Image (cartoon, rainbow, N blue to C red; front, top):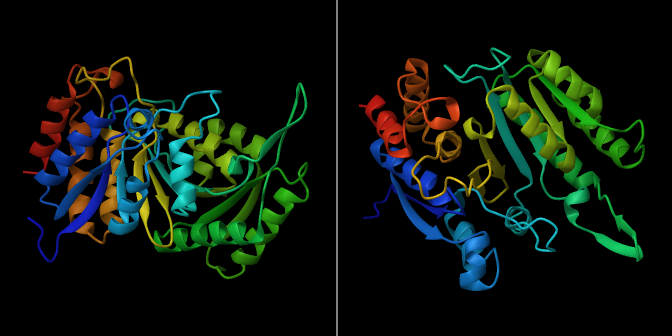
Length: 337
């Protein structure tokens, strides 16, 4: 039953373990008494069989109408010529900012402690614009698109995010020493935006040096802002610092709407077995609740996740435990009671 305060959201199950983790998160949100109504839509490889496309128009229209989506992982064929449903969704909804907070998880042992950084990735252009052609047989050309508009917009988002979240530093990640025009334009936009935020430290770091520094001293970094391709790679690297893609959230933010998603794969080897870890999508739902201006419920869910991990009694198999998806989900719900 929809009430005046209930928010509709588009739930996209995705492929593989997607339906299982989405169902787990729905149960946790219901347990947290979040005033949400779910509108289910299809996306990904499973949608192709039903609609002939991996991103049906009705899915895009639903997100445009509800203004918020919660999405499980989707599969994309490698080298098949089929464009990623994720990339299409971001382009069609102009979800220009990919935001991935990366924090150490209590009870998850890694080589690092107290990691707390945020990767802000430009989501609409760069080599991911998908402009490719065959020059001659055996030679393919891919075109990298960098614009002042998109670069300024993502840099401003990163600085505004840092200011809003009481962060201290924003680092621009680039390769302007080699790509002097494209990455040079991105850096120029970064410098101009930085002038409007004198309270924040602004620095520039070459992408290959960043990779080395991240695995040596990840605590050096706070908010990282970068172009699309670098962001895709660096965000996964950062996830590895805290236990992998299964424990980090992801979001794609636009001016009009946003989609919050699990950024891990579809794990077809365990799909349907009730073994999936829903943590990534759970933490993405926390970001969604904040975006929906439901901070109290967001904290309730987040604190429950942290409590279960801190106690360490209920863990899924990917983290060395024996709990199945249902048992882990019930532990989270119980931690909120």
